[in-house]
Structures are given as C-alpha cells and as structure tokens.
Image 1 (spheres, rainbow, N blue to C red):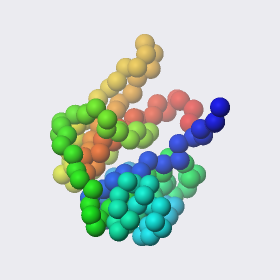
Image 2 (spheres, rainbow, N blue to C red):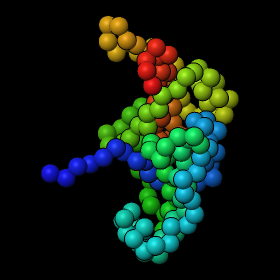
Image 3 (cartoon, rainbow, N blue to C red):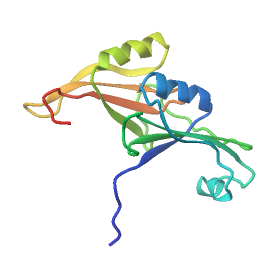
Image 4 (cartoon, helix red, strand yellow):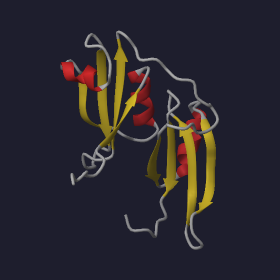
Length: 159
C-alpha cells in the first residue's frame, strides 16, 4: 500500500493575490516565501482543470523560521477566471475547508481582524474539548471567504 506523508501545504484559489498576501502576512504572520511567480508550465493549468491558456500567479507563504510544511499557497487564475460558488456567509458549508492554526493570543488577532474590517464568524470562545482540557478558539474568513480557525495553545502543552 502506498504511504502518504505529512501535508505540505494548502492551495487556495483566490480572486486577488495581492489582497490575500496582505491578509496572510499581516494577520497570520506568514512572511516567509517558499516560491512565487507565474506558473507557465502547461501542467499547472492542467492540474487545476483549467484551459492551457490560463494565466496563474502564485505565492507560497510560510513562517519565516519554520520548515517547509504547513505552508499556504495562494493561486490567482485568470484568462479565464474560475467561477465562484455561492456559500453561506455566517458559517460552514459542506465541501469547504477551514485552515487551522495554533496561536499564542487569539484576542490580539481578533482585534486586528476587527480593525481591518474582516469577517469574524465566531469571536474568541472557550472550547472545552475534554474534562481537563480546553482553550480559546475563534473562526474568521479571509478576503475570499475561506475559513480560518485559530486555537490558543495551552502554554503547558508541549509544542
């Protein structure tokens, strides 16, 4: 049986790459760059199920000091742009993804989101996951409505 390894990155299809870069660097601190540019190899469009004539700009972000795992790839496809889909604006939808990150202070990020006019689905809320373990969490949306969940890591948990 084939072995599948650790997830390397998420690949997000975005409507405006510059706006998304500003969000993921400014709010989540993903300031390292693994790769960026125009994806001109014919297999790029094919892998996305898009016509060969498609233009694809991309930037793969990571934490500056971190390994090349858990990265966020931003992809803007045009000529033609892929269609958008209708989704609920106040919660989850079947088939959608939620990116989950640990964070040391969810309230600080919450204030940044409010200040920036971003959509917060659920402000910092204590989630009791077992009888002895719980932590603050929050859920918000990126500029394209992609859900992001922050979990405030318990300082007593080993990293």
